[in-house]
Image (cartoon, rainbow, N blue to C red; front, side, top):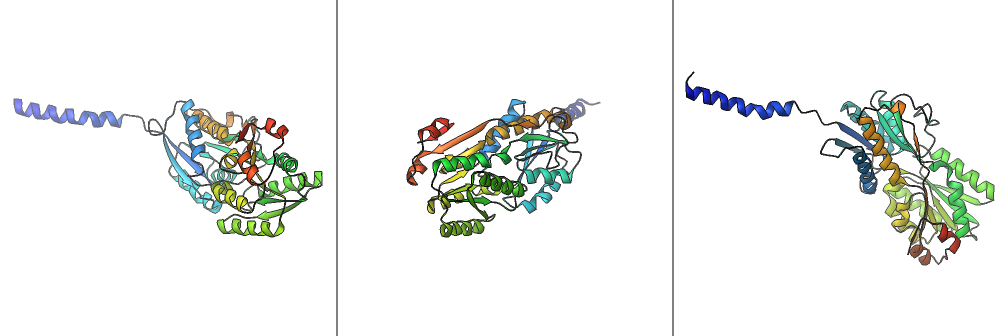
Length: 326
């Protein structure tokens, strides 16, 4: 072989080495992230999810990719979004609301799925038991479905003269029926008159608050809904415009100007969602991972909003609060 031919052959072989080496690199796993809300209001939750992934050694863009799917408050879009992730054959699917988890469960029985739900996941049909979920699904139970009595009690303490209170319910929520039952039972137990308002879209929320303006209830409870979380600023602004004392489920509402919130930590739930997703990526099976049950409850009071409403928050309530916003 002539020297020039040898050098050309050697150069060609060298040029192919990086390609061959790259081809031998393991494929980066892909997480499917499905949520019924919108990316803006859920940005903090997504950050907590990434934190949980980091605790198990995964970082987006470095050794794992994430395919995000958002329903933007349109739960009827969730089955199609879930089916799309299944077609893409992602390694695991993480879901943030009950409707998302139910859509994924209907779409696949093989792809590992990790959820966050506020209702009983056994009753919802997501798992067979909390300790031994079975199948391809496990996750985090936030216990939000049994806290309406506590929220009602807090409002009654803050606004004891409220003969009539209202409850804002998202009828498109997968747990709307249970939420309605919870608040009706809680109100009946203490003799509190309660008026139920249904709303889902931006226009329906405006209409619901117009109704509140005519009813003039003494206070309002806002039910749990990914749709409401996506429309958080609108709801807070409407409550302020109509000067109605309002309690919400998550601290993010109080932090954004709402009067008060009481519920489990959604940020911690999303962090745990990330932890479980990472553990599944490492090879653990959802069937063997017990459903995590949140036990951390938070009371947040916004004194600035209380002052604007002409309310005096009792010292006893302030002492019970996990955070008081001056």
